[in-house]
Length: 316
Image (cartoon, rainbow, N blue to C red):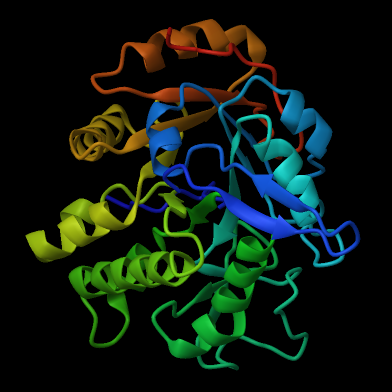
């Protein structure tokens, strides 16, 4: 089956010190809980546009996924102080990070680029104007875009990254000389690379891929499957109960997610449903055959507001 959703958008407790040059005082910053915190999280929120730090800090959510920037631009980037203001309220804050497509509104984009120039830049995604497939295994993508982007996430003090377009491996499975196993293996190595790089700065930097749960089926060896599971702490999934594919597709995804749950990974689910369907959605999510942390976003999929949702949707 086609695994790539057209809607894919697609520190263990340590104290870090910062010296305030102006006052000469030591400001102690307490992470929200790192690996341990993500495993214990009972709620989450997801807002990629126009997020207001004070509103995020006042929300009831344990985990928040936001863009590193209010509007996607470098000039709109949240400051370290803004991110810390959310984290001081006990929140785990993850930065949205597209690793399988280039976005033409990001700081790294060059207006002279065209598909094939640079060589790692692929065709435009027909469902998301301004988003381009990338040969994610090539060093140019890492050097020009991913590493500088990750540096911005680290500099802002995020607890981790929410990795989107991991399912790009499925798109590239027919690249000359490739198989789906090769494409999946290269994606796993990229996720590992991101984790290894980030954890040089923050040893408990959280990685949470979105979708692409079928990578566990498509990777060719059990060793690589274990490496992927070891690299991540959670997984986000869209459209697990509504919208995507057939009932057989959804059952397949649930079977895959059981493996993530068995490996101790937290599962964060977002469904794009209206308020009158939230109760039915919660019933489905909270009775799933594995623990799910649900969040109901608006059906327009804009993710431009933080929807009010029960503090502990599936109980204590």
